[in-house]
Length: 396
Image 1 (cartoon, rainbow, N blue to C red):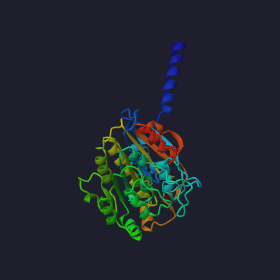
Image 2: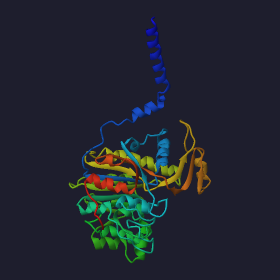
Image 3: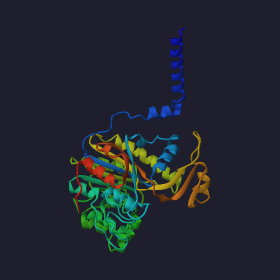
Image 4: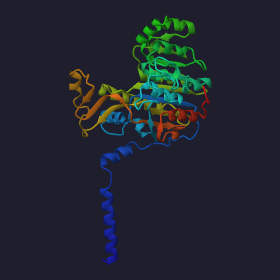
């Protein structure tokens, strides 16, 4: 063998060994292959429809933990395969840590406000002084003749759903907030409204001298107590239940809204607080499966799907091994009462409070390329408006 041949052979062997040394482990290669995008989903055209999925309190760490618990591996959630992502900063105007009222109001109006305030500007003083009403994305959609829907696992008058259709200086004023769904400032109001909170909303309505029945009669619009009570013939159903099956409600709403020739806006909230860590992470996994199901029913060429959270939460995975339960110690904690401010499991630590770090924003479909980088949560309002090709009013 000549010297030149020897040098070429050594060079080839060195390159082969280097490639082997720096190759990803088999499990990582399998994961990457299993979750590679199956089609080109970055639709460049304008959106006809927008669906916003809001996982209340689902920060980056919660999504990671939900994947580990539900699938035994990181990056296994369906939404973690979406091609467009960014980090959304959630603070109100005067603090670092947001509640759901400011968090969702900022997304729905493009205007940051104060904690406890529902879609009003920052000159509001919670419980004492109104700010100006900030025009919501749902109000823009109603003004332009789109069909609209709001679904929540929580009270339909609580902060997150309320920020879509109402304006109030105090998120706790459910008796004042809920009737605003029937007296819209634009269009004919929310077309499909499904959520929980019936008892407390009813009590606050009574304290204000009204009731579900009185609202129904005044606006000629029944308010059903269960999803299965709303007849299929009702194209604009309102259901305020004790509990809400988010999957059934979302698919029912989608069937109704997809018939709209002008397009639609659908907002779906599912609680993801991890005060009870197993319940919260299971909610995220269930929400993720629902999102995958919805994605299979829409045309991404004319529909924007956007996932985000209103604020983050104090959860971290700080231990664990593949093949072992991530939530080891949960049953013992639950049996002991489960009321600690700080939950210490073997592999998971939960500080049961909202936190200030950015939350994920993930998108697919028409207009999804607007989601990228770090940005304030008000940017998500602009992403959805731009997907439709709309401009916000200079002042409202």
